[in-house]
Length: 150
Figure (cartoon, rainbow, N blue to C red):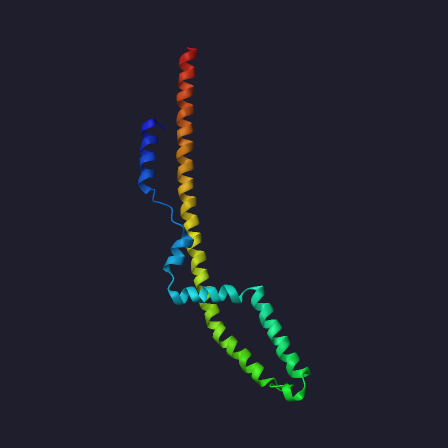
């Protein structure tokens, strides 16, 4: 490869170069307020903290309505109808929000993968250019050494 070929390849690479954008920031900026809310709910509900809160709430509710004095129980054993109603309402409202949040997180993962691919392709082209430059330098050095030895 000649120096001219190297320069041409370098110029083509510069033309293709565009600024690298952070996929996380782009994704965050593209979300509406409701979508941001859905992602936050998904992140919080999918945590151990939320599980512990729900677990403690359930244990407290069931224990109170099983072990408390009969006149203080508000959701009688064994049916726990009010507890079932509240639990079902939580599930009904959280399920669609979680699914929306998961879809948004999936889109975000796809955007990150595309961004990673672009960076990898650019890196591969730049590495090829560097290798071509090194080969060109090796040829020039070999020519200089052979001329010197003559």
